[in-house]
Image (cartoon, rainbow, N blue to C red):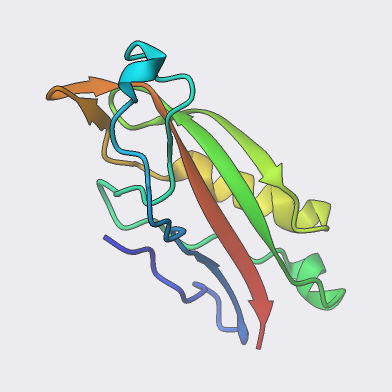
Length: 131
């Protein structure tokens, strides 16, 4: 399921979360890692429910701030974010904080190996663009 790209307010601003497309997206831990999932980063995560777009902070809109925050989230075996952090900043704290808050609310499909749900990291870009 792809995240929605429209903001919930009536302004012309949008915030969207767009799963990155990677040719070699991780889905299983490599055998070289001994099955450890610490290095597993999923760049095309699936969602249990369609995620709500990040809220575009009013002050960021007023200041004309735009950008993309790259967020990493460590998912528990149920697919819920346990730890969420900014991997690459948008350049604006207001936007980075809004991206973190959005990803913390999202529910992902758990990562699996050999049919068993495991802990894994996901990488999600969250874009903020004024129209």
